[in-house]
Each structure stands twice: as structure tokens, then as C-alpha cells.
Length: 163
Image (tube, rainbow, N blue to C red; front, side, top):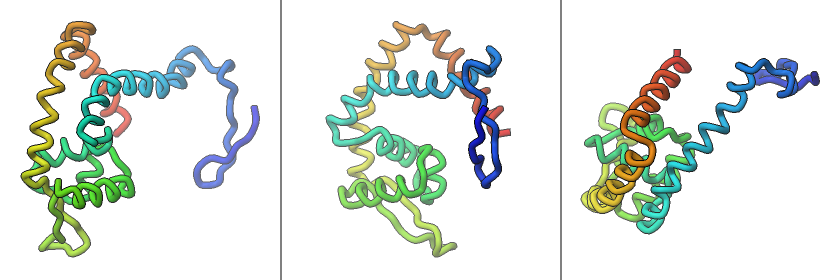
């Protein structure tokens, strides 16, 4: 075992992966398994998004804003699973492309509010129909029940981590 520094400057012992119990080893590999699955899933959608000049994180923002009349930057970042600095760059880009409108909150001058413009809604409406055949293909390949079960397990896992 060697020592490394944990967050907050505390020393922490690191156990070599080969010395982990089988359950701890499964947890240690979970992050890479989730990343591999996410990348595999997104590989179906990226060509469509890129054809429209949209990245994965940008799509998450468009999708979040398309389901709300208006959101502040913090809530948009939270729902799109983005760091505020990443969201800031995306919002600047979307504003320059005419896809969003932004304003300062009337009740709190520290908050910026964002909404899709007609052009933003039009872009979402153009992209989304391309996803339907992908959803159908995934249902065919993986199975509706397995996808539903996976969704339940991932929701439960996320809930447990938030507690």
C-alpha cells in the first residue's frame, strides 16, 4: 500500500486493485463499465447530432430547455449534468447562433434565465425524429424488458448515491 493525499489534504492508503475483495473489485470497475456503456449508447446518436452541428453536452442543454419555458443557469446545468463553466460556453454559443434568449431574473439580479427561441425549438424538432429508429433498434437488440430493468436499476443506483 502506498499513501496518497485525499481531498482536504488528508493522507489516504491506496490498496492495489488485485488486493480488493470481489465485491470491491466490482465497484472499482463500475465507473469504467458505465462510461463504456454511455459511450456505446451515444455512438448511435452522435452522427445525427454532429450533422446538425451539436455536441452531446449541447444536446443535453437543448433537450432540458425544450421541456421548460425558462430555466436559470444553475438549474439548467444540474438537469443537463454539466459544470457551470461548461454550460456558460454552451449558452454563449447558443446565444450567438440565435438558439436561446437570455435575461436577468426580475427577482434576483444574480440569476440569468434562459429559454429556447423559435430557432432553438425548430432545431430540437428537426433532430428528435431521427432518434426514433435508434430507439426502435435498441429495443430490438436489447429488449424492452431489459431496457426497462436497466433504467430501474440505474435510477435506484443514482438515488442511493444521493442519500
